[in-house]
Image (cartoon, rainbow, N blue to C red; front, side, top):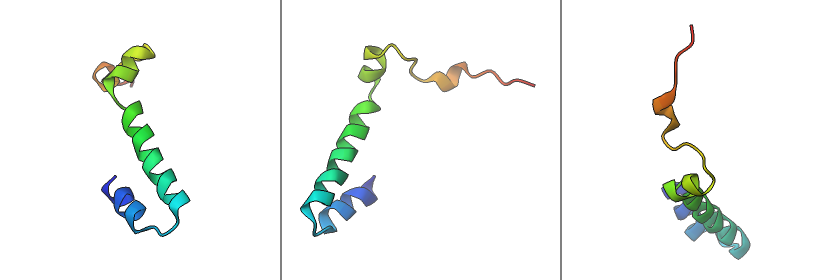
Amino acid sequence: MILFIILAFIQPDKQIRLLLLAGLFIESMVLTPFIYKLTRRSYKNYEYYQEEC
């Protein structure tokens, strides 16, 4: 994530910079627990993982 922020500020093209920063913003919003509750998806689903033999 930090690499993308550094690339965004080094990037001379404004469109690519905007796309990188918009992508990071969208990614950070999608991964919040609020979105999981809004879409009724299970949060921390790795705790419910059952190993099959």
